[in-house]
Length: 242
Ligand code: DGL
Image 1 (cartoon, rainbow, N blue to C red):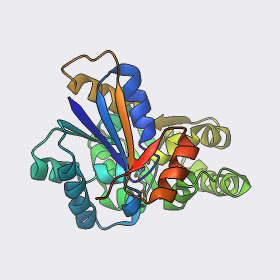
Image 2 (cartoon, protein in one colour):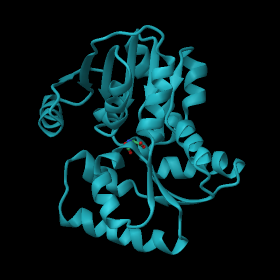
Image 3 (cartoon, protein in one colour):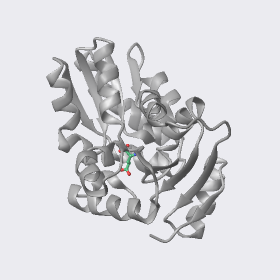
């Protein structure tokens, strides 16, 4: 079973890493760097790109390890006729199972504007206040982790805190990579990340158990991009032209 895990960059590695803890298989991780960032794209543009990317790889299961891409998951499923796992539904189910009724969402412009989280959570009587945090994505993608990022997070917390949320949803997989930093600044509030709830859904969709996993890491960026990603993540990224 070949599983394609897609994000615009490094964010989806949080979902892949959690998945590898639960299940083995043949994985292709694609950092679609050429189309980065996903979160500022128009949804039709993003859907067309995802159809193109999925069409390039003959795979059995697609994992959209990206919240922005997940907003068009049902349209993608329809177009590619393959099982597609996305990150938003498992995260909303986790919110519901834990009886949260007042949450804040940190996400990209596309995810916030899509209203997908808001409508799913409102359906289970949960109030959502959403914040556009697209700016953070650039920091994480480029591994910039210093004072400027701290200040941005402090400012964000000042806006989030007055809402007294029970939890803050990391509604962009990139944010999972700076979870430690977020936890330090967003004190006294639960942090909810999509990686584990999504990994459980992927694992339940994998029918054949494989002991050893094979993972190929690819980027649609140029060789300099592949080099940067390899250095930053510790995995060897190769280029693919899509
Ligand atoms: N990691 C992605 C997400 O979960 C996309 C970030 C971006 O490319 O804008 O939304």
